[in-house]
Amino acid sequence: MTMRRLSGVALAGLAIAVTLFAAPPAATAADTPNPPADLKAFQKYFKDKFPKVKFEDFVNGPYSMDEGLYKQWKEKEEFPPYEFALDLGKELMAKPFKNGKTLADCFPNKGIGIRQDYPHFDAKQGKVITLELAVNQCREANGEEPYSYTKDEMAAVTAYMAFTSRGKVFDVKIPDDPRALAAYENGKRYFYTRRGQLNFSCATCHVQSPGERIRAEVLAPALGILNAMPIYRSEWSGMGTTSRRFTSCNSQVRGVPLKPQDEEYRDLEYYLSYVSNGLPISGPGARP
Amino acid sequence: MRMVFLTGQSRLRTMACLVLLGVASVPALAQAQSANVAEGQKLAFDRSKGNCLTCHDIKGGNLAGTIGPALVDIKSKYPDRKELVAIVSDETKRNPTTVMPPFGRNHILTEQEINAVVDFLQTL
Image (cartoon, rainbow over the protein chains, first blue to last red):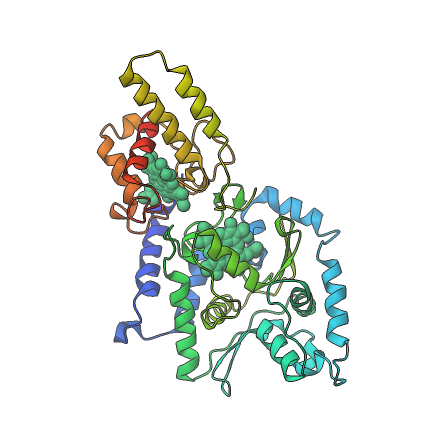
């Protein structure tokens, strides 16, 4: 059934996407990076594929794809399972370090309502700074141990920061700096490159097959896929960060996951967040 | 249970043994054939092997995914078993953008295992 659906326009679109995006990084004129054009084509692909899904709803991952799930989710939101993480996150933001400073002190507006501005390209460090990396850079700069990237405290503080940013739209910028553009291109390449014994790219599942069931799980569309992070998953019996989701998706395809916050993962997050510009932050999310 | 590609031991191993016992008295050829079909089904359903149910609805399996078409009427659709061997070995040859993993090319299944899977497919 999928094939029937994929076979027409969508497949043509994909063929273009595949040649455009998966092209080797050779610097020919046709390959000149053009993020705004990417963003337009990317968002159009999903809007055309799912004409009934409201644009803002793409941020709800698998729930935007399946009416039955959508109802279950609305019911779940009445007693959100991530509530404890919000309380913990709020507390950790304000808790003084040994030197008297706080995590909140490291961020603009004390970390409130700023999720949509991450990741950003830091000209001084010459690299992409994700929210998770910024949290640990702050802790380390103040003589504290970094948090584990995948869950617990890191999930709690990023959940709190996302929650206070709900409704603000992703506003990720690619400054006029060849290094920033290179990071974006690198993330894009990672996203579309097939790897692992099963020969899957991120796009295989989240661009080619969103809305389909892979066993019992409904695949989220790549558009808006980071807006709800971090997420509570029943399967994890707890919270997980973007780092946790990236590494677990890599393991699922019998690939070797990278280290959390590895340069490639940060670049990947930069690309995925940029092409979701204009969509509201909805995190933290709750998943089956 | 939910982890899509994690190894899970197939209950079918015991079933395959029962099938073997059951056909012990019939002629050798038929015996080899149905042993292969049972083995093929086991490989197709095993999460650490074919794991075909992840994407295909297949008679006898449950919690099937919807990424690929339901595998029905395969025998009439592909009367030539070579075609099936080719699809399972490397579907990217027929369709470069397919999401179906190249089971032969990437050594997920051996040639012998692919043959058993194809024997099973021909019963569908």
